[in-house]
Each structure stands twice: as C-alpha cells, then as structure tokens.
Figure (cartoon, rainbow over the protein chains, first blue to last red):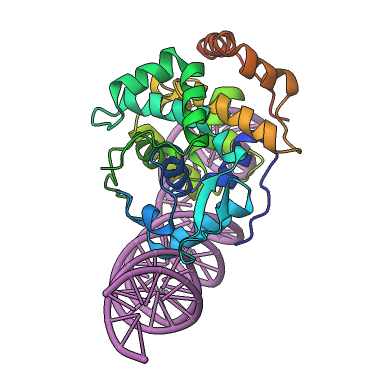
Amino acid sequence: MKKSRRSDCPINFALQTFGDTWSLLIIRDLMFFGKTYYGDFLKSDEHIATNILADRLARLEQVGIIRKIPNIKDKRKDAYQLTEKGVDLLPMLLEIIVWSAKYDSKTAAPKDFVAQAKNNREKLIKQIKTALKQGEVLFQPK
Amino acid sequence: MKKSRRSDCPINFALQTFGDTWSLLIIRDLMFFGKTYYGDFLKSDEHIATNILADRLARLEQVGIIRKIPNIKDKRKDAYQLTEKGVDLLPMLLEIIVWSAKYDSKTAAPKDFVAQAKNNREKLIKQIKTALKQGEVLFQPK
DNA sequence: GATATTGCTTGCAATATGCAAGTATGATAC
DNA sequence: GTATCATACTTGCATATTGCAAGCAATATC
C-alpha cells in the first residue's frame, strides 16, 4: 500500500506511520508482553486477522519500528522485535495508558503501573527499557 | 458506526476511542491551532473529506472528547471545543510530537517547542492549558 | 517418509473512505 | 422583504480497506 504524505505535521507523521487500528497493539505486545512470534500476536485478545497481521508486521518493519530476526532453532519462526525507533514510542504509550486508565472505568491497566507512569515516569521508562534489552517480560498475557 | 469493545486494554481503549486516521488531527487543530468551526477543520493541510469530518466530529462529541457550543452571533456556525477529557490528551500529543520530530527529518514541529516538550514538559503543559482556557492560539495555521 | 505446526497468501463479501454534488438553514445586501 | 451568499452538513456512488475462511509452502516432529 502506497500512501503519500498528507502533511509535515508531526501528529500526521505519527498517524501515517503507525496510526491504524492494529499497529499499536502489535507494538504494545512487543513492549509489554514479550511477544515475539507471528502466532503470539494472533493470540491477542483483540483477534487481529492473519492477513492484516502479516500486512502490519511488514509495514512496521518497513518504517523501521520493528525488525525480523532469523531463528536458527526453528526456521519457521522468525522473531520480531522493537528497534530503538520502536522503543522510543514507550513514553507515548505510557501517556495513552494514563489517559485510558483515567477515563475507562473497566480498564485492565494495573493501578500501581498507572501510578508509576504518572508519578515516576522517568524511572519507569528506564526500568522498562532495561527489561526489554534483557528480554524480560513485564506482564504475562493471560 | 457500531463498534464493540475488543478488549479492556488501555491501548485498545484509546485506539477505539480516537484511533482512526483523522480524529487526532481534529484534536490537534483544537489543541494547538485554535480552530473552532466546521470550515476551519476542512481547511487543514491533510484535506479531510466533509462527510468524514462530520462523522468524526459527531463521534468525538459522543465519546466526550469535544463539545459543541451554540453560536449566538452566527447561528450557522456552532463552535467545537475540547472537553477536559480532550485536553487531557495533551501529554500524549506532546510525546507523539517529540517522537515524530526525532524520526521525521522533514517535520514541521518547531525546534524550540520540541525542546520544551522534552526538557520542560510540565511547564509547557500548564502553559498550553492556560492558553486553551483563555482561547489563545498557540500556533497560526499557515 | 508421514504428519503436524507455523507463517503466511488468496479469494471474496462486508465495511469504510473519498470525491462530487446536493440541500437546508441562517446571514447579508439591496 | 427578497435575492443572494455562506456555512454546515447529507447523499450517492466508485474505490479502497477489512475481516473471515480456506489454502499453501516450508520446516519440524514422530
């Protein structure tokens, strides 16, 4: 799919880069739930369709937000991971979480996590980045 | 349009609330460019189609992010403005701007604004909120 | 070598978008 | 007051995107 730049506005740039209804969920899965393989993303609660997932993974790779790592042990399952460009979306994700936690009474966001994001932002960001580098998983997808 | 909640994830909540390719641009126009009338939004660089604009304004009003104020002077032109729920999206918008400014070499984001968003976040947020309350315009849409 | 798993691709119906034209209401000019 | 204009939409229709189900190819397991 070919889309020409609608404007040079930074909000628009973000929207055109990852602003569809699925990309951020993939990024979320990589950032917080330690998902790495194609099948992992398919299993998420929101039930992304397989053709859409394939398309979004390709697109996110193209724009440099994720990369695909060959898997030697099982050649069928390449691993997806966030690039630095992808990890840099963490502050934005945290603000989204804070906002949604405030306005969605049914939110699944853990209270203490939201509190950390509000009151201890920088520290939380560092913690998560460290965890990501070491391949630790922040939350267990139920 | 009828959408059922895909999950209780806060990221998903945000996506389902304003996560299409146009809503955030309307919110941006209200937050930073002092746009208030239907025609103002139509004039934005990204060229939203009039039927889509009408749909998104209605939807954003429904979810409580904007409100519509009757205009006594010219009854044709009702004014749209952000609610508190809408203004609370400001931190997220700032993070988006910081990210896009970092990765889009052609970004239109003013350097000093981005610097403020990075290094003086809380102060900038207060300034913008004050400006919004007083109906001041932060940037002039060119 | 046969079977199962995994990561896709393909085909197609349903939905959403984008464009152009039309309409209804209120303002302005005479 | 009437004609004209401005503004905020709505409508119709072609095109693009999504969502679902089935299929396929490569690799792993038995």
